[in-house]
Image (cartoon, rainbow, N blue to C red; front, side, top):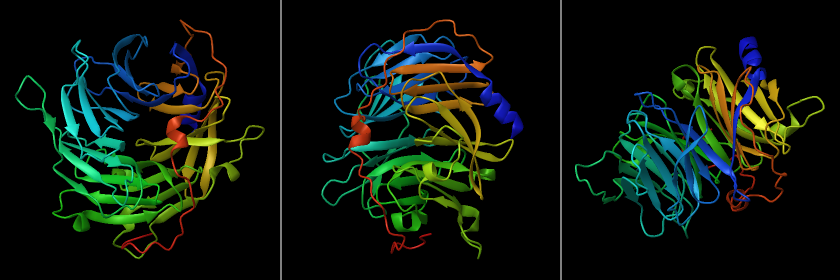
Length: 388
């Protein structure tokens, strides 16, 4: 833990990129995993565009702007070099080949006419794409597609392989596939439920392994623990929950930690935690870390244990407004952050900033993405089976 504390505290801004369009929020960040020396950063932006940047210089290499609706994230393929996925509220998921100069999508995955996608992910072997929808009338879906590309040079639209429609009853705000098991996926919803599925099973009912109740509208879900047998979530009112799936078939309690509002229990001295952004699991140390922040742009790294959340380290003097996304590569000793001040920052150990742009003033207005999310308390007496 001390090594990670020292590593995070020693991060300094190496590069800074500021979008000129005002206001533009940087909503989601992902980094390419392919071989061949590919080092790309993809950022989804509130102006309905995707920026692809060089990971070391933050030079803008590509921009995809043919999105008629709000973006719900970006994901690079795990094994296919340069392939980038994005989901949009127009009911489509697109795959972009960043190696080409073309601004047209290489693949198009279409939902049903009423679908509004607000979450998605790609499984670890790049075979399945899954997207979650807003609730329309009484319908809310998790749609699945075959992600493999065809042999035709002209991309064609793909229809879903199938959908799950019974396990959530409100907007599906987050989807995350298991890091190493392609058949496992966890979903979170504004209904307060966090569901874990084994998509190799023949039916949705058989696929549902567990239903965990967070007590409020879910904003983030992730995997942690040895073998990634734990799941955790954050809520739109800054709650945090953590469960151990290894205890499903035992008499031991599955809930490791449940905090209704992290802002009320995390002590940061003179500073005050304003929001939670996301988390990451450090395999070597077997520690789960949570990242939160303040409206002034300061970032706080929190350690997670069964006794609660505790401060580890703080980064300041980077962003001037709320940070919305991050990607921390502990092996590479670098951190990427994006925020509501339209800035993309690259942090490295002991770095000296080589190129800086003038900072923008803090933007006080909530983004359209955050405004449209329903936040409410959920009772803990859910009637679904296998609920914890």
